[in-house]
Length: 384
Image (cartoon, rainbow, N blue to C red; front, side, top):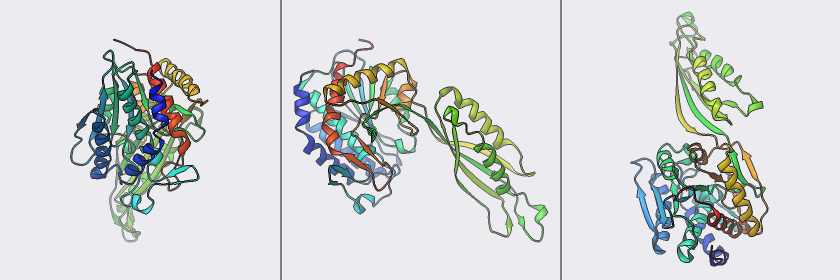
């Protein structure tokens, strides 16, 4: 790789901050199609201004579209720079607390999760476009719905990553400065319970309480938690009933399952299905549906090799870091699961995601961009 790439990136911190300000100040919650697409257009215009091809893949009337930018390189197996444009914040949040920089930290909704990482990816792509040195075609994939488990983006993510040399996912670097070498999978489920209404004073015995049944199921499902293998079951939302003096005719509970090993998924889902199907209260009936799902990002030989490549690149950029495990989910689990070497958390360093205190360390922007560029240049081909 030409060192011009790194020299140029070193000169671009102010420009990267300006671009972060532009996209952070656009509301882009997962269900805000117009906002998510507006963020995508900012990046598309940036790529086009540097003569980089951009493809826009429609996602329907409710989800943001997917943007995919690419530059050519040798061989036919690309290196993918991945990230998502959606945030967890409601409309109006950007106006309430717009992008600011104070005491070396940038603040604003989605600044580190993960608009900062998208800006980093974009500038690395442009650097290789300007100066060359990329050992393979480069693809920047900007998805639209990761915060809700990528129901619309997952197929494109897998199709883009299938057969690629590597995927670098620019989720934020950890507050420790580390990248992410492992993540839990997550399955988000809803159990709906049907019962029968009755007056709780006059004919209590004629009712079948859905809330009572849901309570039994909640306790049994929570008991499946096994911290020794990183398995947790959390029933985080419940609702139900008609009135305080009516036996509850319906109830709903939402389940968050987190797990480390692919091998545990089907076994635990089977146990949950058994519990949901059990008639804890006579005359009640319950069903289970999966609302969203992430796959675990497990360590593999290919993933470990990519981490080693990135660590060497980071040292050349003045950083010393390790791979770190986190319980949070990300799209990196999808790309790793199909066998593509994957590294996550290559974006700028930050912390307190999903909160009003979310921040990004400004001084991490350039060295993390240089580390990614050097890692890309050192990524060996898987096929030609």
